[in-house]
Image: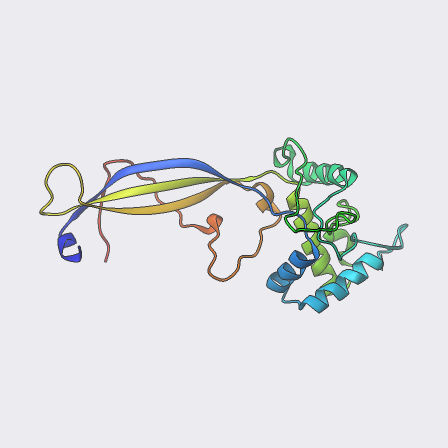
Length: 233
């Protein structure tokens, strides 16, 4: 194949474009909170739960509120969210980001864990209106960082999908020995451009090593069928 390609000419054979949608991750359970806090913040599982316990039991945020619990119960494998909490989150999202960032209906997430305890809700802020900026000055650094993580994950879970312009380009290699219009070898390039951020305006899930993130895919130049291409070596 390498020998055949020596001296070949290249041209765009086909360009395919389509919208690709990506939905947000559900709000945190105990295990997913520990995983994300480890990846994003570098916290151990024990440290995460110690800080979450403090956020749950109550922190003095000053003003008229005084000491208040900032998150719901942190030991849960449920993805349930109270309808009142969803309604408040939708008001916050519309106010901060705009109506286009709201899905038509508040999303409902189902846990896949067998025997999950549905009595508790997922881990979320007790009030979405209590933003990280508002409470940040009242908390120490690590508490602020964990609260921000929980707030962003929950608010993003209630937002609209992100939309990508996904492009696939088939590139024909026309060798000297090739006969006719069809290229004997075809190379494929794929790229993705973010058209509408949706929930990504707030939060993106950390990826494990080796995973690829579609919103970080390469950007392709404008290409049309028949365009000649030069091989750069």
